[in-house]
Length: 243
Image (cartoon, rainbow, N blue to C red; front, top):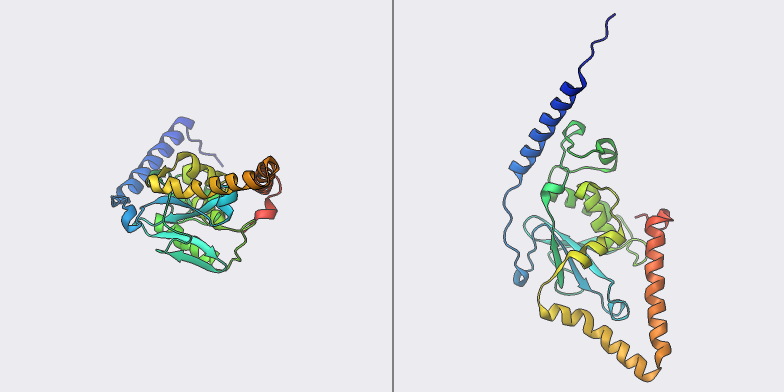
């Protein structure tokens, strides 16, 4: 029985052609998005962020995040068994970052994957469109208990990004989601900057005035402990933050 061998170059060329067709097909199906409109709270395909009461007063790098549908509607994991829609918890959006849908992997079946980890992606859960991914993650988190330290709004956004294999990665977690918004996001307006940092500056000033510099040391220790907790949970002891 003879084994048929295909030249390596021909196989590679066939794969490249098929990959190009899949990519072109996906790009063709991505209809244009509406303009971002902060006044109407519409942020198509964006990550959005707002400060948390009390928590952000002590650690301004911590806030509440959500992810938006293609029509701009905000979705956020706002409490146990509850994914909020079009009513962003804890106030108006302060920062946002629009994501590029061409960096996603949308597949109707295993053979339709445009990413390099088709089997792993399929096992986790895939989506055929941006909104389909958000809907699947929303259904999943409607059965989850909210916990600020283990299963929160960042977990929900990370699940959405892993489901679409955004940026060629399935390693999204609380840390890199927060970093993405804080480092690359843009402010809605000057008032957003003010309401994000003014409470922290007031608490800091009042604490130093009344208690002295030990208050500053305590505040820095609190922020450091939070950061260490999320870093260890995200990269060293992942079962701690499984959601």
